Amino acid sequence: MAAVLKILSPGILASLQDEGRRGYAGFGVPRSGAADSLSLQLGNALVGNAAFETAIEFRFLGPKVTVESGRLRLGLAGDVTAEHKGADGGDSVSIKPWQSVTLDEGDVLTVDPLKNGATGYLTIEGGFDLAPVLDSRSTYARAKLGGVNGLPLQAGDRIPTKLPHPRDGLERIVSDPISTSTKIIRVLAGPQDDYFSEVEISKFTGGSYKVSSDVDRMGIRLEGPELESLPEKGSDLISDGIVPGAIQVPGSGQPIILFVDCQTIGGYPKIGAVITADLPLLGQLMPGNEIGFQLVSLEEAQAARKTRKSELERAISSVQDYFGEGVMDLKALYEVNLIGGVVNASLTGHFPGHLEGGANEKN
Image (tube, rainbow, N blue to C red; front, top):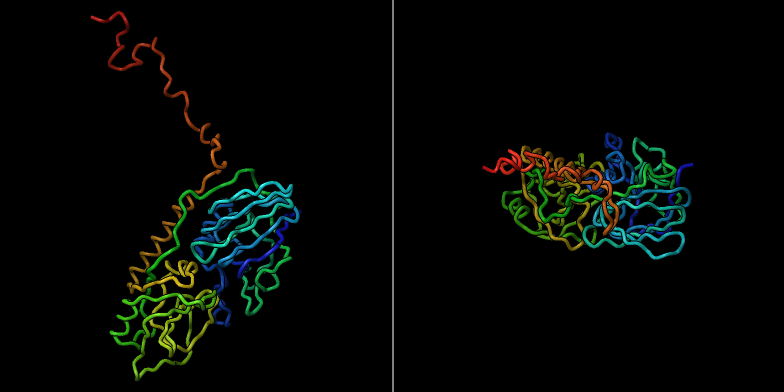
């Protein structure tokens, strides 16, 4: 029988997320999916999953979970720490960021509040055993799609998993994780950049914006230089398509970055759109963070995407077995050739340049 994870406390805005629903925007269904897809993919690599296996995403404060039945391995993805307490009631063990931990039945894992960044993940080896809705298990709470009953996680939720126990007895750690923090967000101009003068566009790219307290998976409201559209254009248009990363400028002049749960159409001019490579960085923005915008060309955006892919591959390749602080890595020790440097002084030629001719050939 597969293991079951129970939510004791959900933390803040905890939900199940994967790659999201692609191809349904024409029906008015938002994409949803991970707020920080880089951390999700690396967290899944940590526990041997496919890149976008469904995981628990949380914002600012993580959940408290226990294993109701079976045995589970979880991965902490992002700048996430936690306390692991065994069912026997012994001392808690601190779990570092980007580390896996195995929970036996009755064990409790309490995720600490995030200190750097807004989003973290708990990945589950093997993933959750839940039916997809429109090709995704991602939670879109406004329409009650996916996840557990279509809602953010609640205390008492019991989530079945696909494995009864971990595949092996080894813990793992990401030794060289990818960074998803930034102060500069790169954007492509448009599609309605013609609603703004060159002066206003320069104000947009040259100014500093603060992330307001009004930030969630639907959008990120900014506070900074007000942008005015051209008088003949106005600040409204016939609603057209919107994608995550689109930057709308409403009548207030304060930009709004649409995010993963954003609506599929909107009627404000869009001065630009965040490039694909920087979309995951939006998931780590916290209220009070200051950011700036940099306009890039399509070619630069494509190059940035390739670079980001290489960075993720490098981070995934750094996943290694973890034996605990101060514990000898026996696997690595066994792989070392311990006798390759042993010498035998009785053999001629063993010390090149000195004993090639043997002990009797001194003259």
